[in-house]
Image: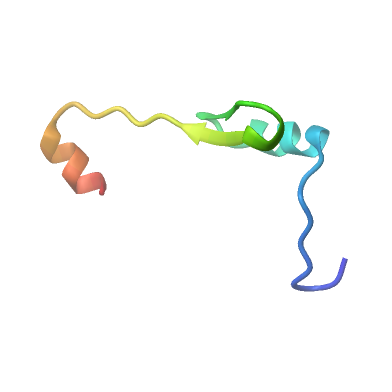
Length: 51
């Protein structure tokens, strides 16, 4: 693959790569497939500091 050329990951590649990033999950399927991560904070000021 040449520099700057990108292609979508296949299903197996997606699961493999995602497993290398703890906390991230797959949601949905087909055209609605996405990756997600949930963040939890102890207080509103922590939320603002994160944003």
